[in-house]
Image (tube, rainbow, N blue to C red; front, side, top):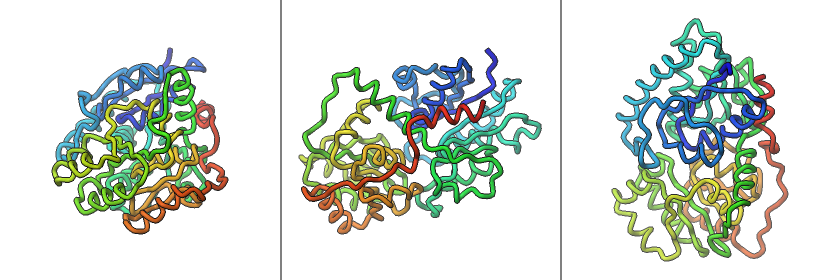
Amino acid sequence: MTQEIAIIIGTRAELIKTFPIMLELKKINRDYFFIHTGQHSLGDLCKIFEVKTPDIILSSEPNKSSKFNTKESKAIIWAIKIIFKIRKELRKLKEIKYVIFHGDTLSTCVSSIGSSRLLNPFKKYKNVHLEGGLRSASMKSPFPEEIIRRIVTYFSDILFIPSEEARLNVENKDHYYVIGNTILDSVHHALKIGETKNLKPLDEKFALVTIHRHENIKNKEKLEKIIEILNSVNIPIYFSLHDNTKAKLEEFGLYETIRNNKNITILEGMDYISFIYQMSKCSLIICDGGSMQEESLIFHKPCIILRMNTERPEGLKSNFQFLSKLNVEKTKEKIREYLSKDYKVQEFKNPYGEVGVSKKIVEKLM
């Protein structure tokens, strides 16, 4: 089969939001060349989602969840090497029409540069960015993701934009489509898989927590504020702890504070299917990531966003998402409100559309 599409993925989050595209291509019998940068380990997810494993892996996959932890110099050297490896692989694909990449990670950045006209002046294919147009309006928050988004937009030929609000950030681009967010398809598919498993809620009423943004975990003062916020929660907390977050908590002498809190249970190794199921059953989400903000909108779950800015402001128009700006007292007050017996989630139309976004994207490309 002719491979007219190349899909470049580096992280688990990218695969989670891109696998529905792969499944749609499979449905219409269209093959694709799957390039994996090696930033995260993806093998188990490919198996869970029933998509093919990468055709090529450009660097050795890490054993832990993060390849670099917090070593910027190592990440920069890796990125430069991967840019030219991507260019080399794409030049082998003679009939390629589209190169697809997703999000705002380091892998997204190197994918956009390695496939760009800057390094491939005679290229005939188009660079396609999934989830384009997101902006937080602050270069420092989140860092380096906000810078990466701008780089990727510059090197992209086609943007698939998740919302009308995000569209306002890319009016200088010629080819963009406000199409919705593939996370709707990812969650829908994950819940269907979850129905075949004997899953049970972690607790009767509980909070689900993840923290991993560099601007948070590299800053001891911010981590201390986050721990103070977590200590104020009066229902059981289940903390999905990333390797790099754990490393920084240990470095700052804060890990034992988390471990000694009997209200906090540390989760390790929970797969995406189980995590989505637990999110659908929880009473409160506390996070600093983007995907959980989107999933909060899908499940209509109260969400505390431990950030100064967000590139997903759409949800802040609801009555169940709160941008904390790490103001400890205001955040504690909002948590008490969300967990009170009188609190009710108001109806809110999801700004990212409905299930079927991935099918629309594939139809546009075809």
